[in-house]
Image (cartoon, rainbow, N blue to C red; front, side, top):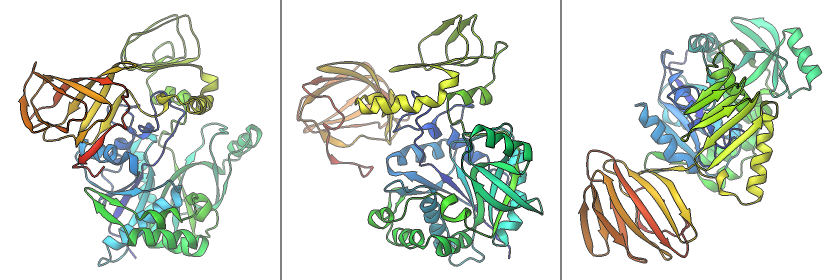
Length: 474
């Protein structure tokens, strides 16, 4: 049986903390531009270009990241079916939702589509080798096998799970078993044997094959997710899975739910410059180190500095006489760490969260469906922001109980509702929104609208917004 369509399934629900202060709860690493001018998510989608029989991608995303996902697809001129998880339930339910959705869409087509499951936050430098591995996997997936891609190990790595290969098959091996992250001695033994691969978390299988495996090994997931998709609803460009049904699903990974139990597994070796950028020390492998071994991004000046990762998102970052350090400067935080302690950034973030620090949640530039805003200055009773509104977009009709706002247009044209008035402001014009007055901001022009907003009042939190009307269903 030949499947004519391959649906990429892009898993966008990650919330990694080891790349703080760039990665935040509401802007995790898959949305960052770390390797080049595209984000990790965008590169994941672009990586499948050229594979025969490619269908529309299915992105499975955290509800809080829905507009970021949609915007990143829009930026590269692609569309996707975006399924929204009402809660994180790990990869097995996420992929089950994609499978049920894909089969429902292709109910009148035979045979069922193949699903190419890809995490959205990995780097693969050799796209041709990746695509060749996918092509080698297609016949096995067509025949009903559950295929995974095993990364050829480059070192005795203790931070990855492993896959042990079995007997040779065309283009790969039968899947013998998955194994947990090993200690250093065991990892070296795996490397020396040549029979073990790093677990990439990438898969290829028919949608019906995966669901049948869930029926056999994890029926609770299949039952709950099928109900969640059956009761889904469309919201703008998104498909919202039913909350009650989806949350009832067991939370587990594909590995635990299916791959460790199946007798229909195949592993295809992958040698394509794979890197999951699990921590800051991995940046040295995806960047382009200079002659002193430094990986640098942004406005960086270094003297007598070696083997360090140096990144600035704005201000000048200058170093003298340092070795083997990670220095990352954003407008609201600076990280300095020993490269050998890169994994411990996660513990630092947990401590910041415990003490209630907001720097773990949002970046200094906060993205919204209408554009973005950036904090410029803040004090107890005032704050200053730069607001960017995309052409044709508008903020909600709203009011505030605790703050007033002064708006100054610095670029473009603003259409403003202020109480009973409607104002049209151009560059260097301004207005004042008193506390409690209903207002809306819209960009009616063809270019971005940029404004400076000065807020003043007793409370300036983002939750002091009473939305009376909103185009984005918030």
